[in-house]
Structures are given as C-alpha cells and as structure tokens.
Length: 288
Ligand code: ATP
Ligand code: MN
Image (cartoon, rainbow, N blue to C red; front, top):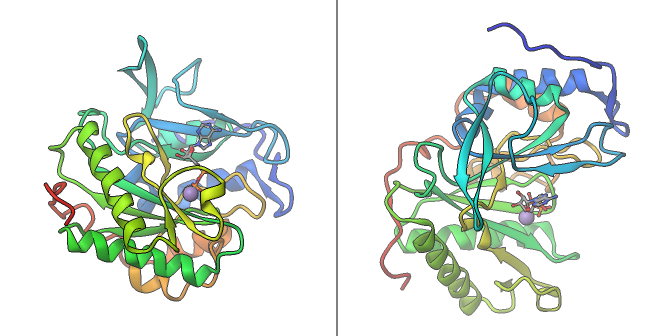
C-alpha cells in the first residue's frame, strides 16, 4: 500500500499530552491489527478536530467532499430521503481519515453488505457522577450474567470516557425493530431486578446515584465508539476491549491512554475479544 499523505504531522492535537497529528497516525498504524476487525465494512461516524481537542471538534456521519480515495461511500435510506454514509475496508482508509483530522471512529452495529440486519447489540453503561468504579464494573458483570441467562454471550470494553460497553454479537437474522424491542425489554428487566442500581430512561433526575443502561444504541443508525479508537478528550484516552478477567484488574475508566494502548497492542498475544467473531447466537424469543 502507498502510505497515504499526512500533512501537518507536527501539529499538536492533544496539548495536555503533547501528542501530534503524526503521533495519531503512528498510533492507528501500530494498533491496526486489533482495530480493523471491528472497524472495517461498517458505516462510520467520525469525530474530527481540525485544530486539536482544545478547539472545535465535530461529529460527521455523512460522506462529503474528498475524504480520500480509500474512503468508501454507501447510500442509505434515512427517515426522509437518503444520503451517503462512509466506511473503510483497510488501514489506508483509516489513515486518510486521520489526514482529515479524525480522532474518533464510531460504528454502526451492522455491516455494509446488509445494514438492515444488526450483527451486534451494545449496552452502554453510563454511571451518574459519584458512582464508584467498582460498582460500574460489577454492574457490567450483572449485565453479562443476565445476558448469559437468556443465552447470549457478551464482551466488554472501556468506553474511554466514564463508562463501559457490553457488546453482544449476533447472527444476522433479526431486523432493527426486533433488536430495539429486545434491548428495551432487557434494560427494563435489569432495572426491575436492581432498581437502586440501574435506570433505563434518559432523564437526568432518574439517574441520580444510578447507572443508565443506554439501550438506544441498538437502533438503526445509532453508533458506538469502536475498540482501540482514541477519544477526543484530555489525556488521549482509548476505548479498549478487555477480557472479563482483565476488567477486574482495571483501576479506573481511563486506564488506557494512547501510549498504554500502543504498548498493549505490541504485547498482546491474542485478541481480548477472541471468540466474538465466531459465536453464533440470536436474539431470544423471551427474556425470562
Ligand atoms: P462515556 O463513557 O463517556 O459515556 P461513550 O462512548 O459511551 O462514552 P459518548 O462519546 O458520549 O459516549 O457518545 C454518545 C453517543 O452519541 C454515541 O452513540 C456516539 O456515537 C454518539 N455521538 C457522540 N458524539 C456525538 C455528536 N457530537 N453528535 C451526535 N452523536 C454523537
Ligand atoms: Mn457511555
């Protein structure tokens, strides 16, 4: 592959951490082996920060302008009309998006060859301020156990922000309507079993002292940050896939920054999400 052009490599992107655009490109190159399996062939949304994280960043979900010759377009139906979305097949596409000052990569829970059939669900756990990290971890394990109870295996990742994502791979049989209905019912069941711990409505007041299970990530067109993506936040944190065993040893939600993630990429022997791509499971008919 010809290395895509990178301009302004010296420009500082994360001022607090002294990380430049060139460092960001080096990062994505270094973690490509672990990043690409989850990122490729899915409609993408981007967080782009042309002047670094201290200035204006914007969220982009449509293909527009000249993003790069390896950045693909796919025309998708929207509520009204249709529009071009973007995806990549390989590292060259990722690096072209880095050239366009992309820091974060968010993906659909479906692949471009069949966008109407989700191949995964994401339960995003958003803790209210003041909730201890250990309680967030045990909440994720409760979600895992309840999913297992209805026959679904799940995997976990640090969001790189405050919370955790529990991810459920699916065979592509149900449509988005079924995925959303199941996710809604599942979140309600979590709340019913532990009302002092979980809430499934987005209202701020209901969240006091609780963890919001955001099940609305499982709607057509919704996105979640992909594993190994940088976050456009102070310290250059990374959204990191973990094994459930590792989660027990992680001391805080921002445990992986760019440098630690690069080191992890180098030392990792196998994907912490091993098994996710092979498991064959479908949404159960009932959640009881
Ligand atoms: P945290 O642990 O801090 O909650 P997160 O990755 O779960 O991190 P956000 O980064 O806050 O959550 O993202 C919330 C959701 O909104 C995601 O589905 C993301 O794809 C989407 N999103 C993020 N930024 C924007 C934006 N500017 N406009 C529209 N949607 C966005
Ligand atoms: Mn979240």
